[in-house]
Length: 221
Ligand code: 1GP
Image 1 (tube, rainbow, N blue to C red):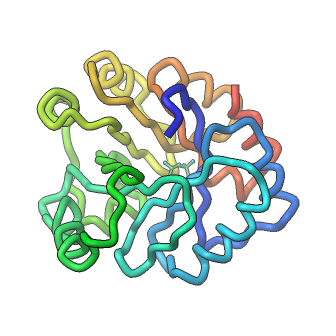
Image 2 (image 1 turned 180 degrees about the vertical axis):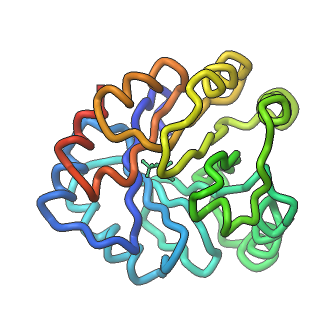
């Protein structure tokens, strides 16, 4: 990903999006289109969306939610690894299984690990990855671990569907010396984008694309 990237639009391959909306999103000044979803993600719906996106010149990445739903042709690939779960399937279990099968075919230079701390207990990903709720102290300890020990390029603070605790996100941003803090959740307007913009390195905008594309475009500031 471009080192100066500040804004990402996240598209769910399982959600229908009309051509008008898609074109507006792709031709906006966003830094990246991230294709990612939790449920009903298949090779077919990813390929179909990629074909529509590729008509335009935009940096496109795929977040691999299942090893069987990987499509060539993206500029970059992210592998999510969930930190606040006790089920290792979602931290590295699936990844190890996938590498046993696909290592020989992988171009590691186009893949990054994306560690997620999922904070919104009501969101699908929290339940899907069997996440555990964490307190502020534990959250900051996870940030230090990922930043200073694992030296991850990115840390994704996920509040999908709701606007997060901006003071806590800022604490993570201030604590991180190496990792870029990626924030996602509840950014639906210029104001909410502005509120997280100086508390994180990169903001991710998802749901509002499908609810109100004009408002989605206003999050690029
Ligand atoms: C979802 O973090 C992203 O994975 C964006 O969240 O859908 O709430 O914008 P929203």
